[in-house]
Image 1 (cartoon, rainbow, N blue to C red):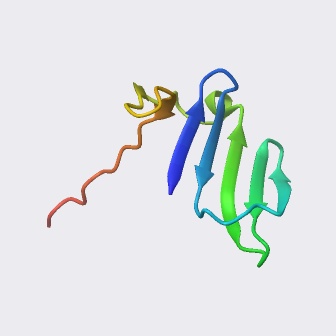
Image 2: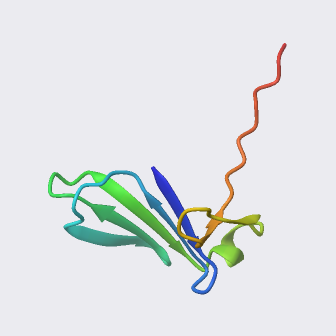
Length: 79
């Protein structure tokens, strides 16, 4: 899975699979789902992200120098 955030367009894109996108559907205002030829979800785009969630922390991606959102994964607490 690839996660890309474009600060200039304020858009988040989650690419779940490398399959060719053959159809897209806007499922809510500013939320677009991409499908492959077998009608499986392969991508998800969220527009105007800053208006929908708390401001993401930004970091520079070392390979292609594009800005990407940092994902924070919390460890479960031990009981």
